[in-house]
Image (tube, rainbow, N blue to C red; front, top):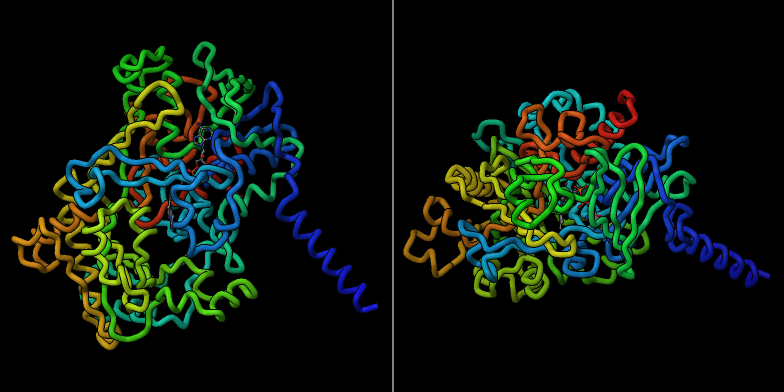
Length: 557
Ligand SMILES: Cc1cc2nc3c(=O)[nH]c(=O)nc-3n(C[C@H](O)[C@H](O)[C@H](O)COP(=O)(O)OP(=O)(O)OC[C@H]3O[C@@H](n4cnc5c(N)ncnc54)[C@H](O)[C@@H]3O)c2cc1C
């Protein structure tokens, strides 16, 4: 009898799991209707929030169009996120060769991964949570001040399940305690926060879209590329789409199209649709709908300098420690242990200097070289643990939080399938060099504190041929500059290419409406007007919540 009961329970559990994970949600469609009230382009961090909130109104119809499909199980494990880069769920962009940076990377190009599929880059990212600093928003236009966004930040912290790194961790403790000993202004060294639930990734795909994807008034069209926005007398008429099989279609819109395709693809789509600097449109023989000179400009990103710190004590995460049976068992049975985290233990700031403490000592050469695009010599020089999976240490990712360099997105061709030209112009502004140098020194100062000294923390100084004529010491500004121009890496935070502003030079107004046309808004990282002193994902979720209220003419609740 007990045998039958166990089998029945097993079948019940299996069918529940199957239904939870594999059943196609009712909103997913293959053949869309001819018209919708709202069309949301891109199911990434922002698009999932917008589509979910708009479809709460049962009297409107919403279509969410996404170029990719579902992300696989790998995306659920926080620590394995880098393994998805370069796969079919990544747009796998590369920047143009950089003039002022990236000298230790193949072709002087940075890899710029972007998520492709339900959840977008939020399904590929490292889950670090931050809302930046209140003063960041002083430069933002009306309606987007820190006070305006605060109710949304509070709401989002719950919905996105923001949690801290585990309490008992050695490196976190050393990092947080270091704050007391530092004689720096506005310093804060905190335990890193991230968005996860029961050891698994928690993105807007989970927190918003999954809650909405059985609604009758929401349709989700996957594996479909939006190729162009169509206009009739400067008012949006619909979208031109390319389906997976290559066939082309048109879908009409009654109220609004909301672009949520991200910092790179949103300006690309606008340009191809005839909205952008007239010179760029003419160069590609694109009929002009609206001359908007700022489309694609104002591109900014944080440039991270990886500073490796050797440790004497066994207090970091090494590959050997990760591959033990209890570690793997604890993850799969209880959703705990290092595999359940993103490995980021501390997040620090002192004025415009930023620090992330990544506690994984081992640097798996094949994977990290593939994702960073580092040349072998650069990689081996930076990371003494490249061939030793037991080496103890950690990586400080050091950054200037308010970079001044600005780059651009321009077209390679008028075909949406051709990747646009990405030029972040890292370190073009000399102030960014000094700002990054100060951040490196901030990192060094944290190491000269009690617990880090007890752990035997000692900074590793890379021996780059190009910097050998200089004093091999990060405290030497010329040496630090040399290293940052060779080894600085994207932090994956590009924003700003369709900035919000009340000024004439803006792409969208304070209500996110694209200037000079009607029925078109943007809500994604491209509208962020100036850098956030932290990570952008949670800020975008809050902004998308506010954008939904603006579109539906609701107040915050
Ligand atoms: C590797 C990596 C690590 C990161 N780590 C962090 C972190 O730890 N913390 C943090 O806060 N931020 C992090 N970020 C940044 C953060 O994830 C992004 O800023 C955020 O996800 C951007 O959201 P978005 O809505 O602007 O665009 P996305 O989330 O990129 O969404 C855009 C969506 O639009 C779709 N799309 C694009 N073009 C088209 C088209 N023509 N037709 C149809 N669909 C289209 C895309 O496929 C995608 O799904 C990271 C990013 C990456 C890539």
